Image (cartoon, rainbow, N blue to C red; front, side, top):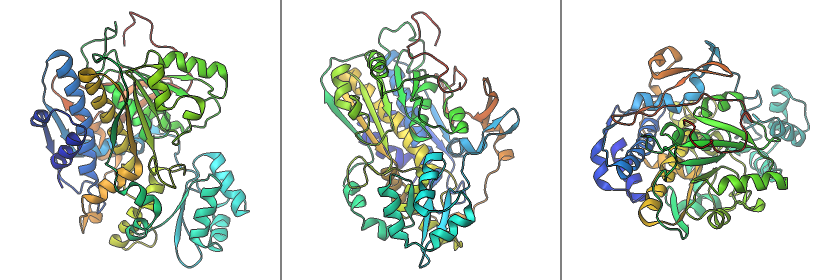
Length: 472
Protein backbone atom coordinates (compact mmCIF):
# COMPACT_ATOMS: atom_id res chain seq x y z
CA UNK A 1 0.00 0.00 0.00
CA UNK A 2 1.31 3.44 -0.95
CA UNK A 3 -0.07 6.89 -0.13
CA UNK A 4 -1.20 7.40 -3.72
CA UNK A 5 -3.07 4.08 -3.83
CA UNK A 6 -4.71 4.90 -0.48
CA UNK A 7 -5.64 8.37 -1.71
CA UNK A 8 -7.14 6.93 -4.88
CA UNK A 9 -9.47 4.85 -2.67
CA UNK A 10 -10.51 7.93 -0.68
CA UNK A 11 -10.97 10.06 -3.77
CA UNK A 12 -13.12 7.45 -5.49
CA UNK A 13 -15.24 6.86 -2.39
CA UNK A 14 -15.95 10.59 -2.15
CA UNK A 15 -16.75 10.79 -5.88
CA UNK A 16 -14.29 13.63 -6.45
CA UNK A 17 -12.94 14.63 -9.87
CA UNK A 18 -10.43 11.87 -10.78
CA UNK A 19 -8.21 14.11 -12.91
CA UNK A 20 -7.11 15.98 -9.78
CA UNK A 21 -5.07 12.98 -8.67
CA UNK A 22 -2.52 14.16 -11.22
CA UNK A 23 -1.96 17.30 -9.14
CA UNK A 24 -0.53 15.63 -6.02
CA UNK A 25 2.91 14.24 -5.25
CA UNK A 26 3.93 12.16 -2.22
CA UNK A 27 7.43 11.80 -0.81
CA UNK A 28 8.62 9.21 1.69
CA UNK A 29 7.94 5.59 2.64
CA UNK A 30 7.15 3.58 5.74
CA UNK A 31 8.31 2.93 8.38
CA UNK A 32 8.67 6.54 9.44
CA UNK A 33 7.99 5.69 13.08
CA UNK A 34 8.52 2.50 15.13
CA UNK A 35 5.43 0.50 14.18
CA UNK A 36 4.59 -2.56 12.14
CA UNK A 37 1.61 -0.63 10.76
CA UNK A 38 1.90 1.73 7.79
CA UNK A 39 1.19 4.82 9.87
CA UNK A 40 3.08 7.08 7.48
CA UNK A 41 0.93 5.94 4.58
CA UNK A 42 -2.19 6.66 6.64
CA UNK A 43 -0.88 10.12 7.54
CA UNK A 44 0.18 11.02 4.02
CA UNK A 45 -3.03 9.78 2.38
CA UNK A 46 -5.47 11.47 4.77
CA UNK A 47 -3.58 14.77 4.86
CA UNK A 48 -3.19 14.55 1.09
CA UNK A 49 -6.93 13.97 0.67
CA UNK A 50 -7.84 17.04 2.70
CA UNK A 51 -5.27 19.18 0.87
CA UNK A 52 -6.36 18.00 -2.56
CA UNK A 53 -10.00 18.62 -1.63
CA UNK A 54 -9.06 22.19 -0.70
CA UNK A 55 -7.37 22.50 -4.09
CA UNK A 56 -10.56 21.18 -5.70
CA UNK A 57 -12.59 23.84 -3.89
CA UNK A 58 -10.20 26.49 -5.21
CA UNK A 59 -10.49 25.15 -8.76
CA UNK A 60 -14.29 25.17 -8.60
CA UNK A 61 -14.39 28.69 -7.14
CA UNK A 62 -11.79 30.45 -9.27
CA UNK A 63 -10.60 28.03 -11.93
CA UNK A 64 -7.14 28.04 -10.40
CA UNK A 65 -5.16 24.79 -10.39
CA UNK A 66 -2.15 24.05 -8.24
CA UNK A 67 0.39 21.48 -7.20
CA UNK A 68 -0.03 19.69 -3.86
CA UNK A 69 2.92 17.96 -2.20
CA UNK A 70 2.92 15.86 0.96
CA UNK A 71 6.07 14.74 2.75
CA UNK A 72 5.56 11.63 4.88
CA UNK A 73 8.03 12.98 7.40
CA UNK A 74 6.05 16.19 7.89
CA UNK A 75 2.76 14.29 7.84
CA UNK A 76 3.97 12.18 10.75
CA UNK A 77 4.99 15.32 12.63
CA UNK A 78 1.41 16.53 12.17
CA UNK A 79 0.13 13.18 13.48
CA UNK A 80 2.22 13.75 16.62
CA UNK A 81 1.45 17.44 16.93
CA UNK A 82 0.43 17.30 20.59
CA UNK A 83 3.67 15.48 21.43
CA UNK A 84 5.87 18.19 19.94
CA UNK A 85 3.89 21.16 21.32
CA UNK A 86 5.93 23.68 23.32
CA UNK A 87 4.84 26.81 25.21
CA UNK A 88 7.39 29.60 25.83
CA UNK A 89 10.21 27.17 24.99
CA UNK A 90 9.06 24.75 27.67
CA UNK A 91 6.92 21.62 27.67
CA UNK A 92 3.17 21.89 27.32
CA UNK A 93 0.97 20.82 30.26
CA UNK A 94 0.74 17.06 30.78
CA UNK A 95 -1.87 15.27 28.69
CA UNK A 96 -2.25 12.02 30.57
CA UNK A 97 -3.53 11.17 34.01
CA UNK A 98 -1.28 8.68 35.86
CA UNK A 99 -4.12 6.12 35.82
CA UNK A 100 -4.36 6.14 32.03
CA UNK A 101 -2.58 3.08 30.68
CA UNK A 102 -2.40 -0.71 30.70
CA UNK A 103 -3.14 -2.97 33.67
CA UNK A 104 -2.95 -6.73 34.03
CA UNK A 105 -6.15 -8.52 35.04
CA UNK A 106 -6.77 -11.90 36.61
CA UNK A 107 -5.59 -14.69 34.35
CA UNK A 108 -2.90 -12.65 32.61
CA UNK A 109 -5.05 -10.57 30.30
CA UNK A 110 -4.65 -6.81 29.96
CA UNK A 111 -7.04 -3.90 30.03
CA UNK A 112 -6.48 -0.25 29.22
CA UNK A 113 -7.97 2.53 31.32
CA UNK A 114 -8.54 6.05 30.00
CA UNK A 115 -8.71 8.49 32.90
CA UNK A 116 -7.64 11.83 31.45
CA UNK A 117 -10.92 13.46 32.46
CA UNK A 118 -11.32 13.70 36.23
CA UNK A 119 -14.91 12.43 36.22
CA UNK A 120 -13.86 9.35 34.23
CA UNK A 121 -10.98 8.72 36.63
CA UNK A 122 -13.19 9.12 39.69
CA UNK A 123 -15.81 6.79 38.22
CA UNK A 124 -13.19 4.10 37.64
CA UNK A 125 -11.98 4.47 41.23
CA UNK A 126 -15.55 4.04 42.51
CA UNK A 127 -15.99 0.83 40.52
CA UNK A 128 -12.66 -0.52 41.77
CA UNK A 129 -13.28 0.66 45.32
CA UNK A 130 -9.80 2.05 45.81
CA UNK A 131 -7.96 5.33 46.21
CA UNK A 132 -6.29 7.38 43.50
CA UNK A 133 -2.97 5.56 43.44
CA UNK A 134 -1.67 3.62 40.45
CA UNK A 135 -0.27 0.84 42.62
CA UNK A 136 -3.57 0.35 44.44
CA UNK A 137 -5.46 0.43 41.16
CA UNK A 138 -3.14 -2.23 39.73
CA UNK A 139 -3.74 -4.44 42.78
CA UNK A 140 -7.51 -4.04 42.48
CA UNK A 141 -7.56 -4.84 38.76
CA UNK A 142 -5.54 -8.03 39.31
CA UNK A 143 -8.58 -9.35 41.15
CA UNK A 144 -10.93 -8.79 38.22
CA UNK A 145 -11.67 -10.92 35.21
CA UNK A 146 -10.70 -8.71 32.28
CA UNK A 147 -13.85 -9.18 30.21
CA UNK A 148 -16.05 -8.60 33.25
CA UNK A 149 -14.24 -5.38 34.16
CA UNK A 150 -14.44 -4.21 30.54
CA UNK A 151 -18.23 -4.70 30.56
CA UNK A 152 -18.69 -3.21 34.03
CA UNK A 153 -16.81 -0.02 33.20
CA UNK A 154 -18.56 0.37 29.85
CA UNK A 155 -21.98 -0.13 31.47
CA UNK A 156 -21.07 2.61 33.94
CA UNK A 157 -20.31 5.01 31.08
CA UNK A 158 -16.57 4.90 31.77
CA UNK A 159 -13.62 4.51 29.45
CA UNK A 160 -11.67 1.27 29.17
CA UNK A 161 -10.93 -1.47 26.66
CA UNK A 162 -9.92 -5.08 27.06
CA UNK A 163 -6.89 -5.89 24.93
CA UNK A 164 -8.16 -8.07 22.11
CA UNK A 165 -6.46 -9.83 19.24
CA UNK A 166 -7.72 -9.04 15.73
CA UNK A 167 -9.52 -12.40 15.70
CA UNK A 168 -11.22 -11.67 19.02
CA UNK A 169 -12.31 -8.27 17.75
CA UNK A 170 -13.69 -9.81 14.55
CA UNK A 171 -15.99 -11.96 16.71
CA UNK A 172 -17.40 -8.94 18.55
CA UNK A 173 -20.89 -7.87 17.43
CA UNK A 174 -19.62 -4.31 17.07
CA UNK A 175 -16.96 -5.37 14.57
CA UNK A 176 -19.65 -7.21 12.61
CA UNK A 177 -21.92 -4.16 12.71
CA UNK A 178 -19.39 -1.96 10.94
CA UNK A 179 -17.69 -4.62 8.80
CA UNK A 180 -19.81 -3.92 5.75
CA UNK A 181 -19.66 -0.13 6.01
CA UNK A 182 -17.38 2.04 3.88
CA UNK A 183 -14.53 3.95 5.49
CA UNK A 184 -16.70 7.07 5.54
CA UNK A 185 -20.15 8.03 4.31
CA UNK A 186 -21.39 11.17 2.56
CA UNK A 187 -25.18 10.97 2.48
CA UNK A 188 -27.67 13.45 1.09
CA UNK A 189 -30.22 14.20 3.82
CA UNK A 190 -32.25 17.05 2.37
CA UNK A 191 -32.93 19.29 -0.57
CA UNK A 192 -31.45 22.72 -1.24
CA UNK A 193 -30.42 24.64 -4.34
CA UNK A 194 -26.75 24.61 -5.39
CA UNK A 195 -24.67 26.97 -3.26
CA UNK A 196 -21.23 28.29 -4.24
CA UNK A 197 -18.41 27.60 -1.81
CA UNK A 198 -17.98 30.72 0.31
CA UNK A 199 -21.14 32.25 -1.14
CA UNK A 200 -21.15 36.03 -1.38
CA UNK A 201 -19.53 36.54 2.03
CA UNK A 202 -17.44 39.71 2.42
CA UNK A 203 -14.86 37.39 4.01
CA UNK A 204 -14.44 35.46 0.75
CA UNK A 205 -10.78 36.20 0.10
CA UNK A 206 -8.50 34.23 -2.21
CA UNK A 207 -8.36 31.07 -0.11
CA UNK A 208 -10.20 27.81 -0.86
CA UNK A 209 -12.68 28.01 2.04
CA UNK A 210 -12.78 31.75 2.72
CA UNK A 211 -16.34 32.80 3.50
CA UNK A 212 -17.24 29.27 4.65
CA UNK A 213 -18.62 29.19 8.20
CA UNK A 214 -17.98 26.17 10.40
CA UNK A 215 -19.49 25.40 13.80
CA UNK A 216 -17.10 23.09 15.65
CA UNK A 217 -18.75 21.21 18.53
CA UNK A 218 -15.89 18.84 19.28
CA UNK A 219 -13.18 18.19 21.85
CA UNK A 220 -9.89 16.29 22.25
CA UNK A 221 -8.29 15.37 18.86
CA UNK A 222 -10.27 13.93 15.93
CA UNK A 223 -13.05 16.53 15.63
CA UNK A 224 -10.79 19.45 16.57
CA UNK A 225 -8.23 18.38 13.95
CA UNK A 226 -11.03 18.48 11.36
CA UNK A 227 -12.01 22.01 12.37
CA UNK A 228 -8.38 23.12 12.49
CA UNK A 229 -7.83 21.73 8.99
CA UNK A 230 -10.80 23.65 7.59
CA UNK A 231 -9.48 26.79 9.31
CA UNK A 232 -6.04 26.46 7.73
CA UNK A 233 -7.71 26.56 4.31
CA UNK A 234 -9.54 29.78 5.12
CA UNK A 235 -12.82 28.77 6.78
CA UNK A 236 -14.22 30.81 9.65
CA UNK A 237 -14.34 28.24 12.46
CA UNK A 238 -16.21 28.95 15.68
CA UNK A 239 -15.56 26.42 18.43
CA UNK A 240 -18.56 25.88 20.72
CA UNK A 241 -18.01 24.36 24.17
CA UNK A 242 -20.36 23.76 27.07
CA UNK A 243 -19.34 25.61 30.26
CA UNK A 244 -19.64 22.36 32.21
CA UNK A 245 -17.51 20.23 29.88
CA UNK A 246 -13.86 19.50 30.71
CA UNK A 247 -11.02 20.04 28.28
CA UNK A 248 -7.34 19.13 28.09
CA UNK A 249 -5.16 22.24 27.93
CA UNK A 250 -2.48 21.19 25.41
CA UNK A 251 -5.13 19.91 23.02
CA UNK A 252 -7.06 23.19 23.29
CA UNK A 253 -3.85 24.99 22.33
CA UNK A 254 -2.70 22.68 19.54
CA UNK A 255 -6.10 22.19 17.92
CA UNK A 256 -7.44 25.68 18.61
CA UNK A 257 -5.19 27.37 16.07
CA UNK A 258 -7.20 29.25 13.48
CA UNK A 259 -10.42 29.20 15.54
CA UNK A 260 -12.45 31.50 17.74
CA UNK A 261 -14.02 29.99 20.87
CA UNK A 262 -17.40 30.55 22.51
CA UNK A 263 -19.44 28.96 25.31
CA UNK A 264 -23.05 27.82 24.97
CA UNK A 265 -24.96 25.66 27.44
CA UNK A 266 -27.25 23.42 25.40
CA UNK A 267 -28.97 22.31 28.61
CA UNK A 268 -30.55 25.78 28.69
CA UNK A 269 -33.09 27.22 26.25
CA UNK A 270 -30.98 30.34 25.79
CA UNK A 271 -27.99 28.29 24.69
CA UNK A 272 -30.06 26.23 22.27
CA UNK A 273 -31.59 29.37 20.78
CA UNK A 274 -28.15 30.90 20.30
CA UNK A 275 -26.88 27.76 18.56
CA UNK A 276 -29.91 27.74 16.24
CA UNK A 277 -29.16 31.34 15.32
CA UNK A 278 -25.55 30.47 14.52
CA UNK A 279 -26.55 27.36 12.58
CA UNK A 280 -28.87 29.41 10.37
CA UNK A 281 -25.79 31.06 8.86
CA UNK A 282 -23.42 28.08 8.98
CA UNK A 283 -22.14 25.98 6.09
CA UNK A 284 -20.66 23.14 8.15
CA UNK A 285 -21.80 21.73 11.50
CA UNK A 286 -19.03 19.52 12.93
CA UNK A 287 -19.67 17.47 16.07
CA UNK A 288 -18.04 14.60 17.95
CA UNK A 289 -20.67 13.77 20.57
CA UNK A 290 -21.86 10.19 20.86
CA UNK A 291 -24.49 9.25 18.25
CA UNK A 292 -27.85 10.73 19.15
CA UNK A 293 -26.60 13.01 21.93
CA UNK A 294 -27.10 16.27 20.04
CA UNK A 295 -30.32 15.04 18.44
CA UNK A 296 -31.76 14.86 21.96
CA UNK A 297 -31.29 18.65 22.14
CA UNK A 298 -32.71 19.24 18.66
CA UNK A 299 -29.41 19.36 16.77
CA UNK A 300 -29.28 16.06 14.91
CA UNK A 301 -28.46 15.98 11.19
CA UNK A 302 -32.09 16.04 10.06
CA UNK A 303 -32.81 18.90 12.47
CA UNK A 304 -29.99 20.94 10.96
CA UNK A 305 -31.10 20.12 7.41
CA UNK A 306 -34.51 21.60 8.24
CA UNK A 307 -32.97 24.52 10.10
CA UNK A 308 -30.46 25.38 7.38
CA UNK A 309 -31.10 23.71 4.00
CA UNK A 310 -27.72 23.16 2.40
CA UNK A 311 -25.90 22.40 5.67
CA UNK A 312 -23.01 19.94 5.70
CA UNK A 313 -23.29 17.99 8.97
CA UNK A 314 -20.17 16.06 10.03
CA UNK A 315 -20.37 13.36 12.72
CA UNK A 316 -17.27 11.89 14.37
CA UNK A 317 -17.48 9.00 16.85
CA UNK A 318 -15.34 6.25 18.33
CA UNK A 319 -16.68 2.77 17.57
CA UNK A 320 -19.10 3.50 14.72
CA UNK A 321 -22.49 5.11 14.26
CA UNK A 322 -24.35 1.81 14.43
CA UNK A 323 -24.05 -1.40 16.45
CA UNK A 324 -24.11 -2.30 20.16
CA UNK A 325 -21.09 -0.12 20.92
CA UNK A 326 -22.32 3.00 19.13
CA UNK A 327 -23.03 4.64 22.50
CA UNK A 328 -19.83 3.40 24.12
CA UNK A 329 -17.39 6.12 25.13
CA UNK A 330 -14.08 5.76 23.40
CA UNK A 331 -10.81 7.39 22.49
CA UNK A 332 -8.10 6.58 19.97
CA UNK A 333 -5.99 4.44 22.29
CA UNK A 334 -9.04 2.48 23.46
CA UNK A 335 -10.04 1.69 19.89
CA UNK A 336 -6.48 0.51 19.24
CA UNK A 337 -6.74 -1.76 22.28
CA UNK A 338 -10.19 -3.13 21.51
CA UNK A 339 -9.60 -3.80 17.82
CA UNK A 340 -6.34 -5.75 17.94
CA UNK A 341 -3.85 -3.04 17.03
CA UNK A 342 -2.11 -2.88 20.42
CA UNK A 343 -2.12 -6.71 20.62
CA UNK A 344 -0.49 -7.03 17.20
CA UNK A 345 2.17 -4.43 17.94
CA UNK A 346 2.99 -6.25 21.19
CA UNK A 347 3.20 -9.62 19.47
CA UNK A 348 5.58 -8.28 16.82
CA UNK A 349 7.89 -6.45 19.21
CA UNK A 350 7.57 -9.10 21.96
CA UNK A 351 7.05 -6.46 24.63
CA UNK A 352 5.92 -7.27 28.15
CA UNK A 353 2.68 -5.33 27.85
CA UNK A 354 0.42 -4.15 25.01
CA UNK A 355 2.09 -1.72 22.63
CA UNK A 356 0.09 1.16 21.13
CA UNK A 357 0.85 2.94 17.90
CA UNK A 358 3.59 5.60 18.19
CA UNK A 359 0.99 8.35 17.78
CA UNK A 360 -2.74 8.90 18.05
CA UNK A 361 -3.00 7.88 14.41
CA UNK A 362 -6.70 6.97 14.41
CA UNK A 363 -7.62 10.34 15.90
CA UNK A 364 -5.57 12.40 13.49
CA UNK A 365 -6.48 10.37 10.42
CA UNK A 366 -10.18 10.52 11.29
CA UNK A 367 -9.91 14.28 11.75
CA UNK A 368 -8.39 14.76 8.32
CA UNK A 369 -10.97 12.39 6.84
CA UNK A 370 -13.75 14.44 8.44
CA UNK A 371 -12.33 17.64 6.94
CA UNK A 372 -11.97 15.88 3.58
CA UNK A 373 -15.55 14.65 3.76
CA UNK A 374 -16.79 18.13 4.64
CA UNK A 375 -15.05 19.64 1.61
CA UNK A 376 -16.24 16.83 -0.66
CA UNK A 377 -19.80 17.55 0.51
CA UNK A 378 -19.32 21.29 -0.09
CA UNK A 379 -18.24 20.45 -3.64
CA UNK A 380 -21.36 18.32 -4.12
CA UNK A 381 -23.52 21.10 -2.70
CA UNK A 382 -21.97 23.57 -5.15
CA UNK A 383 -22.66 21.21 -8.05
CA UNK A 384 -26.02 19.65 -7.25
CA UNK A 385 -27.32 21.32 -4.10
CA UNK A 386 -28.67 19.40 -1.12
CA UNK A 387 -27.93 19.01 2.58
CA UNK A 388 -25.31 16.40 3.46
CA UNK A 389 -24.26 14.17 6.34
CA UNK A 390 -20.64 13.00 6.61
CA UNK A 391 -19.96 10.11 9.02
CA UNK A 392 -16.54 8.93 10.18
CA UNK A 393 -15.37 6.84 13.14
CA UNK A 394 -12.09 5.87 14.76
CA UNK A 395 -12.93 2.18 14.47
CA UNK A 396 -13.49 2.37 10.72
CA UNK A 397 -10.25 4.30 10.31
CA UNK A 398 -8.46 1.63 12.35
CA UNK A 399 -9.91 -1.12 10.18
CA UNK A 400 -8.63 0.73 7.09
CA UNK A 401 -5.14 1.02 8.58
CA UNK A 402 -5.14 -2.71 9.37
CA UNK A 403 -6.09 -3.44 5.75
CA UNK A 404 -2.80 -1.91 4.59
CA UNK A 405 -0.89 -4.92 5.90
CA UNK A 406 2.12 -4.82 8.20
CA UNK A 407 5.89 -4.38 8.07
CA UNK A 408 7.55 -7.26 9.92
CA UNK A 409 10.44 -5.22 11.32
CA UNK A 410 8.71 -1.85 11.31
CA UNK A 411 8.79 -1.73 15.09
CA UNK A 412 12.59 -1.51 14.90
CA UNK A 413 12.51 1.87 13.12
CA UNK A 414 14.09 4.69 15.15
CA UNK A 415 11.83 7.04 17.03
CA UNK A 416 11.72 10.72 16.10
CA UNK A 417 12.38 13.22 18.87
CA UNK A 418 11.65 16.91 19.24
CA UNK A 419 15.08 18.02 18.04
CA UNK A 420 14.61 15.99 14.86
CA UNK A 421 11.50 17.91 13.79
CA UNK A 422 12.19 21.56 14.65
CA UNK A 423 12.12 22.49 10.97
CA UNK A 424 8.54 21.19 10.71
CA UNK A 425 7.27 23.39 13.56
CA UNK A 426 6.09 26.99 13.54
CA UNK A 427 5.74 29.65 16.23
CA UNK A 428 2.72 31.80 17.04
CA UNK A 429 2.11 34.31 19.81
CA UNK A 430 -1.04 33.56 21.78
CA UNK A 431 -2.76 34.26 25.11
CA UNK A 432 -1.13 31.03 26.34
CA UNK A 433 2.35 32.34 25.50
CA UNK A 434 4.58 31.71 22.52
CA UNK A 435 3.33 28.49 20.96
CA UNK A 436 5.63 26.19 18.98
CA UNK A 437 3.55 23.60 17.13
CA UNK A 438 3.43 21.45 14.01
CA UNK A 439 3.06 23.46 10.82
CA UNK A 440 0.57 22.34 8.17
CA UNK A 441 2.14 19.28 6.57
CA UNK A 442 1.02 19.87 3.01
CA UNK A 443 2.55 22.21 0.46
CA UNK A 444 0.16 23.93 -1.98
CA UNK A 445 1.59 26.04 -4.78
CA UNK A 446 -1.19 28.65 -4.92
CA UNK A 447 -3.07 28.62 -1.61
CA UNK A 448 -0.57 27.74 1.10
CA UNK A 449 -2.37 26.59 4.26
CA UNK A 450 -1.91 28.86 7.25
CA UNK A 451 -3.45 29.82 10.58
CA UNK A 452 -4.69 33.40 10.75
CA UNK A 453 -5.56 33.23 14.44
CA UNK A 454 -3.73 31.98 17.50
CA UNK A 455 -5.40 29.53 19.87
CA UNK A 456 -7.39 31.21 22.62
CA UNK A 457 -8.77 30.03 25.98
CA UNK A 458 -12.16 28.33 25.87
CA UNK A 459 -14.95 30.91 25.82
CA UNK A 460 -12.82 33.89 24.79
CA UNK A 461 -15.25 35.02 22.09
CA UNK A 462 -18.96 35.68 21.95
CA UNK A 463 -21.26 33.22 20.15
CA UNK A 464 -21.43 35.17 16.91
CA UNK A 465 -19.98 35.12 13.42
CA UNK A 466 -17.42 37.71 12.45
CA UNK A 467 -18.96 41.10 11.75
CA UNK A 468 -19.43 42.03 8.12
CA UNK A 469 -16.34 43.61 6.61
CA UNK A 470 -13.86 42.37 9.21
CA UNK A 471 -10.77 40.53 8.04
CA UNK A 472 -10.78 36.74 8.40
